[in-house]
Length: 353
Image 1 (cartoon, rainbow, N blue to C red):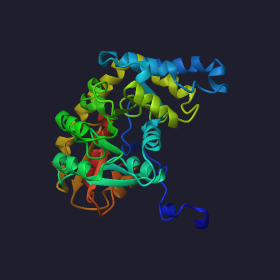
Image 2: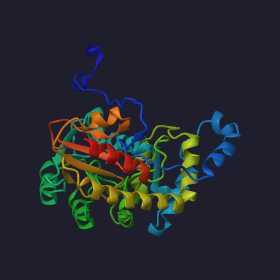
Image 3: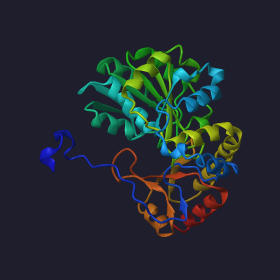
Image 4: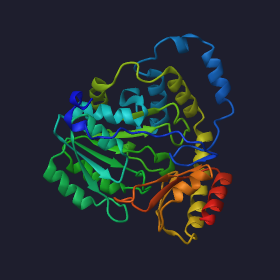
């Protein structure tokens, strides 16, 4: 099959996430909590209208975009400032398709979300991964120098960063926005946990695109709703690369429901943040734990002094995330914050290690 393939992809391995049996699943930064009690009944009633399933979805997701705009009206966001996609992954792909010519440079942090690099490679871009420092903080002076030297067509910032959990300060983001002569994508998928955002500046900076998602704080990972907010000219440009009918009717309706019940889901966010700090405190007492990194997300990155922890927990039907033995995440594991009961059980099994 290689003779038919693009030469630059012949040795590339596709992304797979194997399905494994579990009793506790804390490997993918998903919500551990059930939905609002009215959610199931609402969606059941909605499905009684056959057209909601048999007809193609609204290709522009007008009602959802309008609801997102209302949610952020304090920042003067309007429907025209929003584009929706199948997870933030699709929005990333659209951004790269629209702005980056084959061979042009994208700057993306590492370690960070893998889709920046994958999206760039699949769209023939040159992806220059700039490294975070040893504490997984952004080296802003080095990044500013790199922007000057590389003259990129696109810059990615992830804050809070996945998989490290750290937050990039506002002043540093503004420095990057002022320096870059290209679109700057600020991935705020975990912003509901940090409480920090750059939304108030989207009108001031026409080159800024902010990514958000319903997968984390709102518990809709299985429905894959992502969106971006930017000025109208930017959003109109991104629509050039958006596939038609991309986001299902079901995903659109469910996303509107959770925004209508925003406070319910923010109570869950507060519970996760409280559990995160309890979990961090207990993890730091374990003899094989070298460091638990500060996090403004729904997960913790943990440096450990031994291998095999992920396998041992998997045997006990607890799924966590581990990383290769080489590279900047060598010796690290990542644990999503679960319910209090789940977290206690995880700690019990880790103490057995």
